[in-house]
Amino acid sequence: MIRKVCVIGWPITHSRSPLIHNFWIRKYGVQNAVYERLAVPPEDFVATLRDLASWGFIGANVTVPHKEAAFAALQFHDETAARLKAVNTVVTTPRGLEGRNTDGYGFIANLRERAPMWLPSRGPAVLIGAGGATRAIAAALESEGVPELRIVNRTRSRAEALAADLRLRHARIFEWDDAETALDGANLLVNTTTLGMKGAGEVELSLERLPGAALVTDIVYTPLETGLLRRARERRLATVDGLGMLLHQAVPGFEAWFGIRPQVTAELRALVLADMGIVES
Image (cartoon, rainbow, N blue to C red; front, side, top):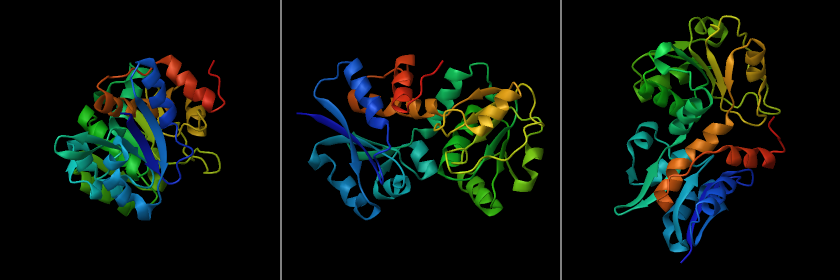
């Protein structure tokens, strides 16, 4: 019997999850396994989730715009998904389908791989945005021991709602016009928005008030170096691009489905970059 896993989204043609997981399936010699794309509009999502097992799927990834709908549709969740109220990984367990969220794990694992000198306890983290990705990253950073989370968003009420909903213990909300003040003494700056993607505009923020030891990262990975990362590099600040978050968030799911914990390697990164038309020097 073929063990099938899929990524469900709308649209889904852009997803590189099949490239990542099928690479690992080949690399680790997983027999009778395949990872597919499943394009599912919102009105069909709940029915699709319900029918996964009957279609031969042992699990799935869930991407935009279905993460919150997956949480609502599933009876069982891991601790992280329950806190975030969003699911990106579905696993078959003895009690039924369980929703998990590995986005925060992927974010932290990417920082640990690409910037091993970064220590979360050294100072505040500044998060630009207050969307779904912000939720996962804020919760992960708090769990890692970051002493203060400074959230900067154009709509203050949305940032306040995020902090309250996650019960963040040490969160401060900054007005967008006061964003540069939030950089004072910061240890980490994270863009959690789509700003920086082609056609989406840029993060218009001076980095002059960031300490020289600060780390700057961006969850956007197309382009690999966003305008924010380029300006940070020009200031000689350490930077981490967003591609590793995509690669690392896939690890726990693959392990749950196939019983093998895969490694994020330079070979895998090069494969995904090649698919993006990029050759890294």
